[in-house]
Length: 568
Ligand code: ADP
Image (cartoon, rainbow, N blue to C red; front, side):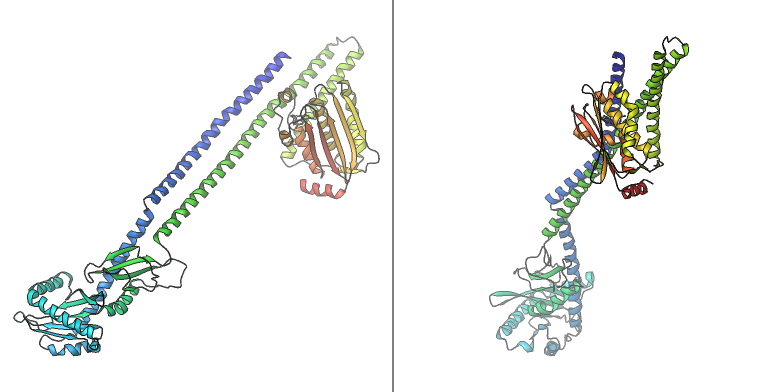
């Protein structure tokens, strides 16, 4: 007993060591995936946080907006030059100052026009259509006096500036700002200066006209802003649309705006550099702010990151579970091989020993001889049972197991199966109780398979009993089925193992179980056989008190036919 026990123990320790040597390998495998993935997720989260902290998204959008505004400014300036150069082309010749009035009549958008031909010689006219407005007349007078003074004093500077413009930008006009008081506010006018036709080196002339702020606010800028931003639709809420406005440096409210402007404060502003000095362009999104876009962007990205992390964790967990299962199965298989070899060796050794003894003819009494023959027979029966189990198992695994269902008196089948074992069981010190109900209906079963199931259960009951040696086999009818119960008062099975014991190769990790021979195939065969009969197998067990295995076989033929179809 001693050495055998030790060798068993040694085997268990070795198996355990194998199991532990698998774990680090799995851990390394998991870490190889987890570490880079976690690093990636953490780095992305950190990156997003820093974008959030440094308002990175806002900065990018603002930079974009600055560019949009720069382009808008350039286009608006081009339009302004086009418009003013067209008007300049129709401006009276320097020798015809009287034509200023008719020029204004044909250009109703122009408020005032003037022609200067040397110190003190200024012709000035204001838009005749508005001469009824005294304020306007007053404004004209003031402008006339200002222009006269500017040109008298600085005509050379203006001429030089115009030459420079023509040389550098190819522009024949110089556009600047003129602020005029109206009521308690300052109004913005655009003043256009140029050298009129008929101006010569000997008789230099300067001319110009002014666009009123009303024209800029109601006509020029609305058109210009809408062409800068084409395809605007204030009713389209599917995406935020950009809107541009223009305001004076002296006033925060817009002078003019594009159609999508919905009030509020511009997100980015840019002052006009050349054509409209003193005016400021502003841009924002209709119905939203850069901040909320940035928040949404960050939120979406954080959510995606979170979802990815969850997916990764889920994936890792699934991988871990399936790898653990694979490892457990691999371990069960290796246990199985060593268990089966053990199981084969013992009966073979016994058979050889007793056969040799018989061969030598040294046994004195026939009774002894009979006893030895019986041992040889029983051991070979055990071998056959084991090999049958293994063969059955391999057929099931290969999907080739076939059942031969025949109408059978199950009571008779159970009785005769137990009969050959009764003596042996009782001899082993078991109290054996057999309760078989009368008048049970005949069932369609594969006799051999059912007998093997019963023997597997009976063998287990005997194997896994210690002091209280009891074996009960009950066959009775319950509702639509016939139940076969095998009861023992043995070591029992812990609740968390009760499902696993029906899996192939599985043996409870109890040392007592490991000291008992077994392959871990018996119950998985029982389950397969019972399911093929359209029935069920269940276990009720309390550790230390004993177990009860219940096979339920349906009485109706239909269930069996179904099961036959399923197993085929
Ligand atoms: P084995 O060849 O190991 O007996 P089985 O498939 O028949 O294989 O049983 C699987 C495991 O279920 C056994 O190893 C044992 O741990 C447990 N078991 C089976 N029947 C009993 C029982 N009657 N009492 C206690 N444990 C049992």
